[in-house]
Image (tube, rainbow, N blue to C red; front, side, top):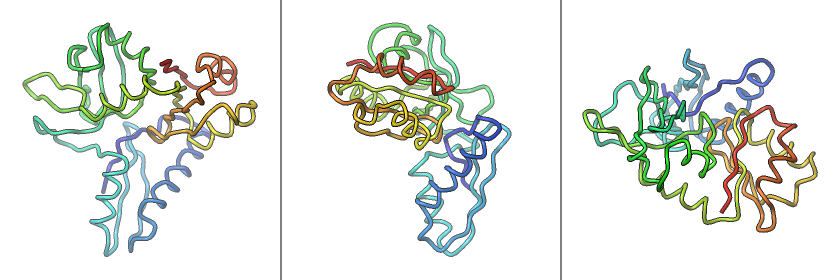
Length: 225
């Protein structure tokens, strides 16, 4: 079994649509391997994938690479994936399946000056977004270099609109219905329900947020270069 490092936290019809989306994503990753799989959702909203078949080991490794994995025990100095659970001026708290969460102090974010709340605003981080971290055990944990580099790159581009509580297909459909098909390059999948709309050079991210916000029952945050 592999526990994927992305959360399914919506309810009702949205939950069923999200499960269908996750099933499709998993099938895209391992559908050509000689395996069968079952999806489940843990009490903490992390999906579990039970895999059987001749290629089960390969399939588990493919899903770990694609989504990150929630593991029962963390080792100091190793890199893991958690989801952004909460934040305050002193740091981020990531949910990595450990109960109390993994605190990343502001000084260990590596994302420039300001409080953790200001940093979250600057980089447009939405709740539940998966982030990689290096576990510190007795030392403070820190944001992984790969995550720092990716977020810095966001601020050098043409702007983004980050969204949670919606699948990639739902975000694309909303943008197109709202008349913004020409205002974005692509929608990058950050997690199952966390997406990043990559704006075109002439698109104003705050303006895009104002236009589509009423159509998306979600948290939306801008990255303005």
